Amino acid sequence: MISSTTEYEKTQEEIRILEERLKRLQQTHPIGSKGFTKAGIRKMIARLHEELAVYEGSEEARQPM
Image (cartoon, rainbow, N blue to C red; front, side, top):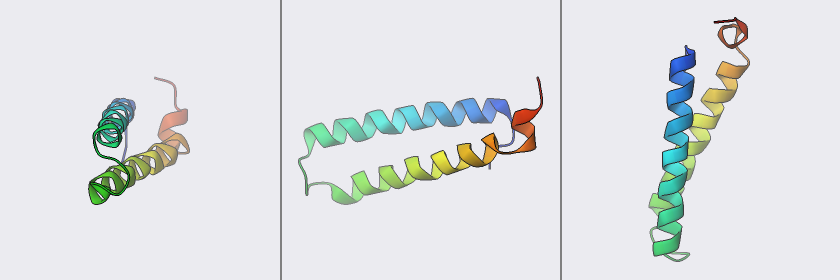
């Protein structure tokens, strides 16, 4: 669970890295190949997006630094 602005920023960077990794996999392995790996990366990205959304809706995100 994300509980600070620093963790929020780290999570955004992690999403960016995972999206780049997924893009490379899609370029090097056509549809049907490495499907489990690509699906796993997509699930990780989705989970991180959910955590960002929870944090954005939390009281911590609304408090000024």
